[in-house]
Image (tube, rainbow, N blue to C red):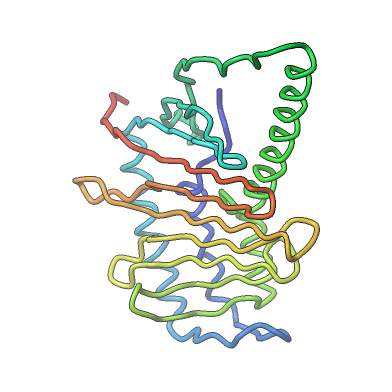
Length: 241
């Protein structure tokens, strides 16, 4: 089954491609420090182009675990690789089906209702996550051209922060290694219908032995819905092209 480009691929031409545009500071958005952005954007594009070209030589195992109200489901796994057109192909790895509810008809009915409710909650969380990950190239460009960005520097590196990406008051933070201009981490803070009903997502990137960068772990938390999701990418092996 094919999906859209992974965020590692989507970012290669878009995250800082338009960052050289003059920065503005709309109300409520902290001021940034855009000096030298043209050079940094060029470095970023070159680094990501090299990285994505290297990733296309690999296949890996993607594993997603969902926890609802303290109950953890068996991980869903798939083998992932790149197709010639740059899309990713996911081949599900068979796993044991979830156990059927036990007990009498009434108990089974109650348990089935709870399972349906949990499924709806997980789907709602997944839909919100997909509004941010992988980052949408057109939306990134729109936010950047609107000047809803800031540049931060701290001990973890340099970060490009985007405000009001998908919803008013949300925040996406892209942490970059200033030496290599590779993505180190993505942090998302958003909410569902009520701003108090929050959702956070964090993507941690790691390096393969040849220094290729990949999204190693994605953590999603929706406290109000009592839903947590963890996705890991591992077991990278080179494949014939």
